[in-house]
Amino acid sequence: MEQNAIESLISKRINEVQIEWKKDPFPHAIIDNFLPEDIFLEVVEWTSKINTFQDLKKSFKTYVELNKNVYGDKDLLKFSRLPIQILGGSIGKKIFENFLNGQKLISMLDAPDYGGYYPFHSMKKSGMLGSHVDHSTSKLGDIHVANSIFYVSPRWENKWGGETILFNRSGLKILKKIDPIPNRLMLFIHSSISFHGVNILNCPDNIQRNTYYMDYYVKKDELKNIKNILKDKGFSKPVYCFHSTTFLPFFPLGIRSFKWKFIFRKDTYSYIRTLLKYLIYRYFLNNKIGFFLISIWRFLRSNKKNN
Image (tube, rainbow, N blue to C red; front, side, top):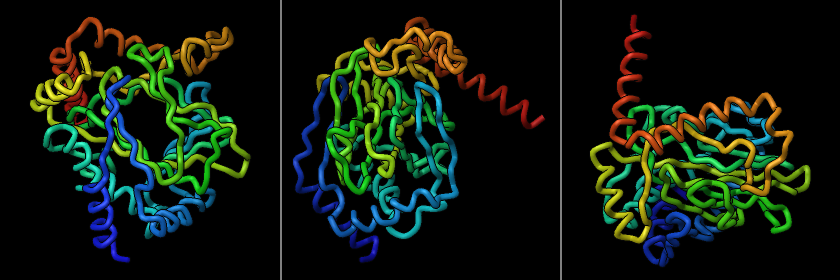
């Protein structure tokens, strides 16, 4: 089946599905059986070859980011590239745009090389991803407002863990867990308080948690409109400030996950530095000042490179 025909099928299905958005702890929604079954099986067949992939971009081994690999798209051939095109193209954007009263979005796919981020992620047994908020802006300065996660493991059992976790505004309390059911699309609105993570994987050695990931952005001057829309939809006091991807050291999976040994690990200190910057911008600098300062920093860095 040609890609245009596949996209037409998916678009028709999305138009027929009543997407139920939940507002707590931040707006999110789930679409099960996102791809037609035969197409999804083709995607799974290709992505199941992940152990042969060469385009590994990053591999994480800290206690906050454990047993996680992220890949570029050089090994994603034929059907395995399709989810990127769908999530980052008109279908993926339209789902969020409908929720955001028609506000037009920019996706990670619209930027050269995905804006320096990577679309395909995989986690192995004992892997986890601690409580964090993603980067607040793209490298072009656009504001990060939404995420999508598409689960493509061949199969998944509840006892294997690996749920996507949604935390409260501080990132210290688990409020919801979403199972990584194959062919499930998970959507959420991202802001500086959209703390999320991945629960510990208890899967067999030969099973991996494979996902596609996509970011969505708006221009700076459209942020006020986004805030007003979210307030009207019951998402009280959305927060937007400048920060890089920020994890909570010491408490990777909520307040109860604290262990004294975390304090003495060398990999803790880089997370602390990033967290302190996040806290300064969130509580002491409003978003206008923060975005202004980062614009100056980027300008100075660009001039330094050119000289």
